[in-house]
Amino acid sequence: MDVLITGGAGFVGSHLSDLLIARGHGVHVLDDLSTGSIENVAHLRDDPRFGMTIESAHNREVVADLVDKADIVYHLAAAVGVELIVESPVRTIETNVHCTEVVLEQAARKRKPVLVASTSEVYGKSTDLPFHEEGDLVMGPTSKGRWAYACSKAIDEFLALAYWNERKLPTVVVRLFNTVGPRQTGQYGMVVPKFVRAALAGRDLQVFGTGEQSRCFGHVSDVVRALADLMEAGDHYGQVFNVGSTEEITVRGLAERVIEMTGAESSIVQVPYEVAYGQGFEDMLRRIPDTSKINRVLGWAPERTLEEILRDVIAFETTRDLR
Image 1 (cartoon, rainbow, N blue to C red):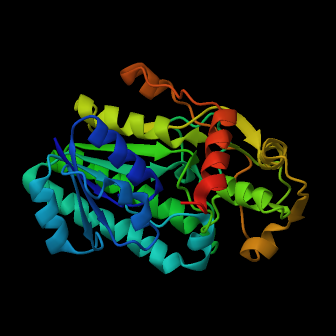
Image 2: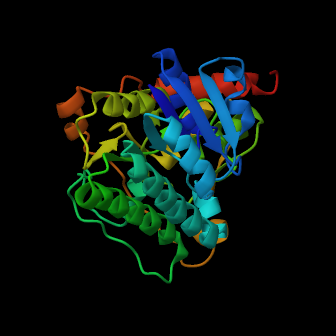
């Protein structure tokens, strides 16, 4: 197949490009490089099955042309990272909602199947764990900009499913839970690469809040395998799937593990949320996915443990400056 990936020069998109090309598909990446990087796909540049357009998914004419040439579309372009979301809420909302509108609109003209990447953030402040695809979404107040990202991605989901229900555009929604691995930047608040880079540099690791908030970190290779399998199967349209690991760890525990595995002499410094993100910031205490649905329909389950994930990130960051 010929595949279009919006946001394909990003962390997840570049790994998805690798996998799809390895499976024999042609891949064309659309990315404005606002948060993605040309370095993420530089190794694919000379592959005849790979192409790239540097432009925003806001551009209807460009999206229309690329969708027309594709068999399926992965819509991964989005604002990413808590820091970016807090600092640039207008950009977050406009990027997430408008780009999705454009991609779905153009895909609907030619009935091209679309996978829309969403996020575990849509579960908001729900405490009904583990999070199930049919569970209620519990958002915070609109006065707290931290929830703008969650709401914008929820709108993306509503829109994708509406296109399926009303216009029969084949769409799939995937909620990603804390995907990590090589090539991920810590620039926008991604905690694993930030911790690893700090430890390797001998700096203290900053833990925001109490550090008792817990997360489940999934390896990007496991995640992109799920994305590829869902669209290759081609018979799960109009559905939402959680994709992520169920191996839970607190943020403080993660920091301790990184220090141990890097052999660093770094300390852990606790930073109040209001210092890190401003007054009134809210966070989720726990975030655990129920992945039984995707396991049931695809037989998918994560293969990499947290220890393997950290080894990969540490190895990548150790050699990053040598490349």
